[in-house]
Image (tube, rainbow, N blue to C red; front, side, top):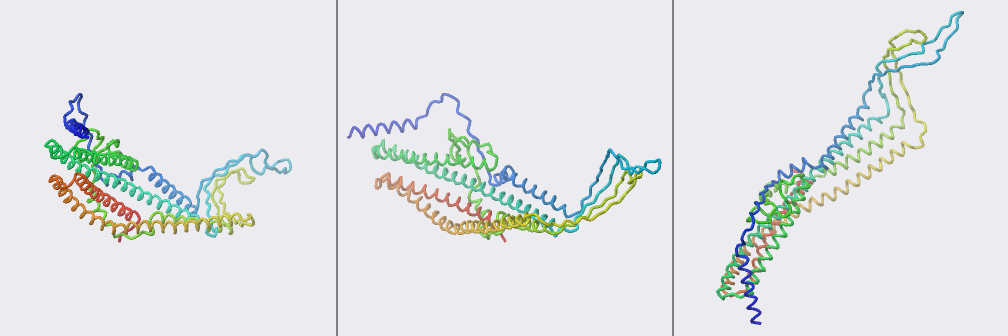
Length: 456
């Protein structure tokens, strides 16, 4: 057993020496990865400018607005310029004595402006216009809600990046402490005051911290890709294995990432905590307008069962003038009356179908309002709990910082084991990362409140 411990100690000493010894360079060192500074304002701007989904939504809103104006034109007189040419193979004629009189000509034409106007249709055209307007408003509401949702998703991805960077930063700071402790333990081990087990545990502590840093860097890469998908901009950052810009130079880092400070974002977002739920938020307004669209369409179908009166008239340059072969300027006007008599319930059933669609949209609006208001007030309530957690966590950090220092001093004096030092350091790191998580949760809650709320 003695030989086993002796060989273990020798192996650990050689491992530490090998880790500390410089490795001769056989080729030029790679260039340092770039430092990429991404601000929340830049990310929000890019997401709104580059989102294909948002461009599609606003294009559909513009199309619906154009459709509304097209239907609206039916409320006004329609003026057109008409031209008609005719040819008949046989012209009626009358034999008068030895002469034959033709009533017209084989060739003819009719050219001039024509006016058409609906005098009365029981409001059918007016209801179609209102329906088109509500449809356009609904599309605009949907586009605006999508814009706010894209901003929310961008913020959430950005806050996740900030959270990853804080995890990396706190772990890097703890790694510095672990490395310093490792140096002390190596010196003590060489002096014979510490055992190989102490060296082993100190190494294990460093490895655990390095593993947590690697995991956080992997998560950072994933959240960078999510931000790139939302913004359409990678900001020149290779997301393969990025690093916190505050960390020392790391050979395998593909980019060094810097963002706004979470506390600075919190100062800006804190104004949202006074918001109230907006029961006319884009998604709900869109459903309300959608219900009105179907209702007005139903009224339009019902109105089509009523009599319809239209006026048409015009002034034309014509040839021939009846039986006389001459050009004339001729005015014409007329009124048309159309009374539906039988259509097997077509318009009635179409109106009923649209009314059912209107009811469905209303029920969906009620369900969506309950869901969104619950999300809003849950986020608002969470802020109170997070504020208490933040205050307690900051106190825990202060206590853990002091405990870690006292525990290490006690370890050096020989009154505790390194396991207790490891636990004290771990408790401090857990409290620090918990604080970073609380900041991210607060920012996400405030972002949801901005998305669904309204200020005074």
